[in-house]
Every structure is written in structure tokens, then in C-alpha cells.
Length: 113
Ligand code: FES
Image (cartoon, rainbow, N blue to C red):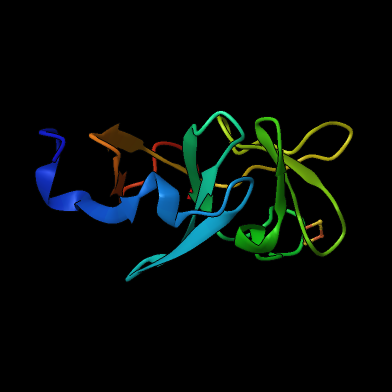
């Protein structure tokens, strides 16, 4: 378990529990969080709410380090939560850490709301 802000971190399972190029939905008291897995098994977490009209990013497809929103196909950068230009907006980003194949997620956003 990461040591900083220990009470805000939760274990969300193993990397293999997330479909490649997909996401796993984590329910938190402050809203749903989508935890994504890239082709290279990198893990990112964003608020499960597209900055356009709130589409469920957890149901999008991951391309590289971006996810395509299933509603109107905006692309969102997984590492920043920012929409790819010319679209504008930002989904909150949450810290994640992988230790021994286990994913830990902070429920406090690193950026955004
Ligand atoms: S709600 Fe995501 S692109 Fe429109």
C-alpha cells in the first residue's frame, strides 16, 4: 500500500483483472472512477465522466494513452485527463500505483474534480 495519504488508497485488483485496452469501474463515495489498462500494461485512472457531456469513459476503447468516449468519440489523454484538441475540457485524474501486479488507486484526485 502506498504510504502517502494511506487512508485514501484502495486496492482495486490485479492488472489482469482489467481487459487490455479497456477499463474497470471503481465506485467511490465521491463518484465513479475508471481505471484503464493500455497496450503496454500501463494503468491510469480518470473520473468516469467525459468532459463533454458526461459519457462513461470506462466504456470507451483505449488507443495508445488516450481513451475514446463511447458517446461522441472525443479523445481524452489518460495521463492528464485533457481532451484532445480541438475539443476542450478535462476529466479529473487520480493517482494509481502498481506494486507486485496489484493496482492501488487514490480516491483523491490529483487534478480536476
Ligand atoms: S459525452 Fe463524451 S464525447 Fe460527448
